[in-house]
Structures are given as structure tokens and as C-alpha cells.
Image (tube, rainbow, N blue to C red; front, side):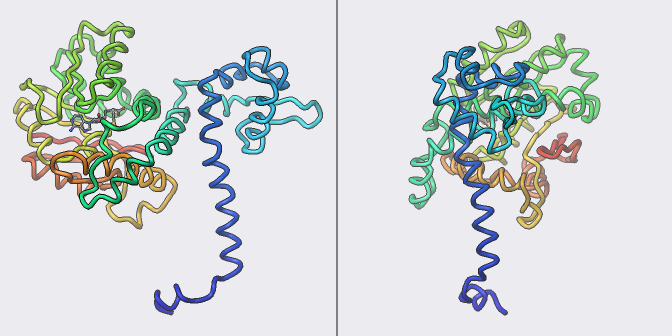
Length: 362
Ligand SMILES: C[S@@+](CC[C@H](N)C(=O)[O-])C[C@H]1O[C@@H](n2cnc3c(N)ncnc32)[C@H](O)[C@@H]1O
């Protein structure tokens, strides 16, 4: 049967049933987004972590939240498998695994940032829909987005960076770790709230790190966080576009999950090429993807394509260049960007289930 005939055939009841059942699960997850935000915002997860089995009344006492609303919230969590329920006692428990996902910001499995991004995507839906209607797809740049998008991004990516950046990604780059130990000049382009700048600055006190981002509110957060972390002395932060930053002669320029958001990735990579010392390194961290759509039709690709539809692609379309690489560009396309920018040596230096790390040398 060709695809047109197949699309005009009457619906297959079993396939329809299967799809509707899947939708039940998906809609349940979508409806949970504001509930998780409430648990996060009100400290409900933190209160349950290690508290043992609690009743709604006990949780109300320890958090000051309304008991009746808590009962409903706890029931929804039990139905989702986000908390456990003991039918014999009527008590709810947070298991250590659930705590790692919902209650512990430093755990590598923490998902609170992803729920914050999901919430931001719902809140920002009207301007993205407007961009869909515009011929040029403009109007939904980062400047128009709600604040929880930026804090969500910072929280979502940080556990991955703390698990991999110092232990795996920097050591995978040729000679970079040694240089950082001795004292190097580093720029982090599109640094957002500065998590990676701070991690590297703490680990390599002899080096100096400049975080650059065109989103002024993010740079203000990054500066404050660096102060709190005690690395103000070997960090600096600059509000600038990725092609407009002032300095040169960097030993390392890094770009964490940011290049594909930019309107002119080749222009930015060309600027980076010109800002590196002749023996310098560009480390580009991008979402993991295969080169073809069919390689990305899996849960990670699902998450990234959705985020890319709501964030990365409209954000890039709103910038000069409007390249719109998307979050699933894949290594071949990313390598082509780097080669076009003049990098002669390009390789994939490391990979995780969520990220690809590319090393480019002039
Ligand atoms: C997905 S966020 C990643 C932030 C941070 N690197 C991280 O991994 O948590 C992308 C960042 O790139 C910044 N950005 C996007 N386009 C930019 C441009 N043309 N110039 C400078 N920064 C840009 C955004 O403001 C945002 O903070």
C-alpha cells in the first residue's frame, strides 16, 4: 500500500486504542508539570526527602501548605509513581531514587530544571505561535522569554556538567587540562547563568575565565553566583553578542549548548577562530544527535526536538543570520560549520547520552 492509500484507509481500531493509551500517559506527564513546579517552589520535595512515611496532615505541618491541596498533590504523585503510597497506613514516602530526581539539586538525575523549562515553554507558547505565523519565523527571541526558561536551563544542564566537564570532557581535549593547570585564558560563549565558568574557575585557580552572553539578566545571575562561589578573582562576565566580544588570544574558547541557538554559527565560529591563539582550542558542547531524523526518533530526540521547536530554532530565527541549526543538528552538520569557519582539525572528543563534545583547532 502506498502512503496516500494508507493515509485514506479507515482507522485501525487496535492501533487507535494503542495510540490513545499512549496519550493517556503523555497527558498525565504534561499535567504533572505545574505540580512538580509547585513541589519545587514550596519545598515539598525537600521536606519529604528523608522524612520517612508522611500523611498529608504531617506534610502540611512541616511545610505550612494547605492540607487538602497537599492530599490531592500527593495522590497525583502516587498515581504517577513520583512518590510511593502505602495503602495500609495511608502514608506517602519519597524513595531515595525519587529524591535524586525531585529533591536533590546536585544529583546527576535531578530533573527539576527540565520541568522548569517545560513550564517556560507552556508560558511562552503564544510568542512561539506568533513566530510560526510570521513568514520569517521571528519574534520569539530570548529577549521575550520568561525568566524561568533561563533558570530552568541553568538547573537542567548543571548536573550533567558537574558529572562530566572536569572528569571527562576537559581531559579528553588535547593538552588543555595541563594548560589550564598552568594558567590559561578561557572564554565561555553563551555562558547563561555561568555554571561552567564557575566549575572551571574553581578547578583551575591559575587560569582566568570570561563568561559572555547577550542576555543581561543571565550575566547578572552569573556574576552573583561567581561571587557566592568565591571565584570573582579569576572570572569576569561580559554582556555581549557572540561575535562582538572584545578580547583575543584565548587558549580555550568553550560554548556549552549555545552555538546552535545562534543566528550565525559560522560567523561566531569564525570569530572564535580569530580569537584563539594559534595553538588554542575551541570546545563545542552540543546536544547529542544522529545526522538523520530517523536516528533521533527516540526519547532523547523527542525531548530535544520539542525543546528545539519552542526554544533553539525560534531563538536562532530571531537573530541576524537565522541559520536555525536546531538542537538536533548532528555531528556532520556541526563539523561543516567548524570547517567553514576555518578550523583545520575537528574531532568528536567525548560523548554522553545527552551531549557531544567537539574539539576544533585552528
Ligand atoms: C541553551 S542556553 C545555554 C546556557 C549555558 N551555556 C548552559 O549550558 O547552561 C544558550 C545561551 O546562549 C545565549 N545566546 C544565544 N545567542 C547568543 C548570541 N548571539 N550571543 C551571545 N549569547 C547568545 C543565550 O542567552 C543563552 O544564555
